[in-house]
Image (spheres, helix red, strand yellow):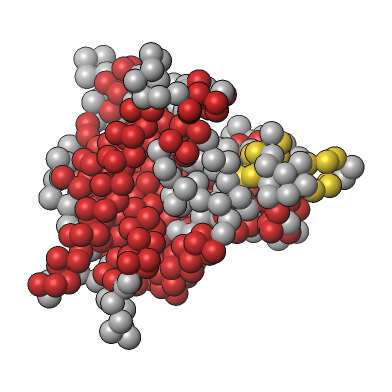
Amino acid sequence: MVVLNSAATAFDLLGKRSAIYSDRPFPMMAGVLMKREKSMFYISYNERFKMYRTLFHQSFNPKAAETYWPLLEREAISVILKIIETPQDLFAHLRGTAAVVTMKIAYGYQVTGNDDYFVTKAEESMRVASLAGAPGKWLVDSLPILRFLPEWFPGAGFKLQAKKWYNQMYTQYLEPVQYVKEQLKSGTATSSFTSRLLQPENGLAADDKLEDIIVWTAGAIYAAATDTTVSAMKTFFAAMMLYPDIQKQAQAEIDSFMDQEGRLPTISDRHRLPFLEAVFKELLRWHPPSPLALFHRTSRDDMYKGFLIPAKTTVIANIWAMMHDEDVYPHPERFDPLRFILVPGQKPQKNPLDVVFGFGRRICAGQEIGEATVIAQMMMALALLDISKPVDEITGQVIEQEIEFTTAIVRCGISLESGFIETQFISSAILNYSKSR
């Protein structure tokens, strides 16, 4: 196992030598036993993976991503209105909106509510994937020979569990595609990633091989997009609460834009809001949603600066260390968007967007959509909300907060397991809707 703590080294190996460093580790429990060799997150660097990347690039390249902007802007306004109505449900609103966006993009499916059938199954599959992939949880990951135990053997219950989870997760991927096929047959399908691939403009329907690829690529959209965007937005609300002066400066920029244009900003106005852009970059640098990214693996031996890196070595890009390197980002613990503002005679610090989405041939294929989603919601929040610390209803005293972050492959921002944060930080109506806003 090799951990890369330097962005320069990560670019050297994962970028410039991507032909060697683009494989994935394939764990025994979450990979072999659960038959996830076709999963976007575990698949080896092979011809099928290249097909996945091609399909994603066609649908989510910078130009194609613009077609989703109206949806992202509409849902950004919708989630802020929900937060205004019931601020105590902030986290639920953020997650619900992420589900609406991803299901619409992937399948053209309109989510029916918090207990929506497809969303419930997708959320359960994400929970299962997290359990199956938890490092150190499964003895078979450390002792692969255990995979040969018969299912009836005492202590081999993990094999039955793996089989159950595989069926559950594959069904969660398959059913929405079947839904789209039925919609296409009846002529009621909404344009989506899946519908365009199942029924392309050339009129040739997808064969069984392509349909199987569509099942696995479309299924990856929900898992890849939901947690990361929700994590970024939770961090945004926490940062605006903790740093009111930064919030006011960002709001002033938004207000100035609205005074000039007589309307709310849109994603296409992003380049006209440099401080908002700086806040966005600092969010991802300060607390990156995926601090260790997904692991890479070498396909053959490699030599780097005198070190032999053998084939099948797990290579981890330590995004957290890169974003908190004091030589690159002075005082990295501070939330300071000004580090990304161009000042005459002063060189701005390195753009974190070049790092936090990954490296080489495994870089996040949905980066454009992810950026636009968070930017749209930030715009609407700053335009319509004032975000502050909770105030004791009896004494009128501000209740100081300690923000906790979860420890996981995707950090969920503020920890939902902390009763203090959940009841005080959320229930005390920290989002005070200002009529002037």
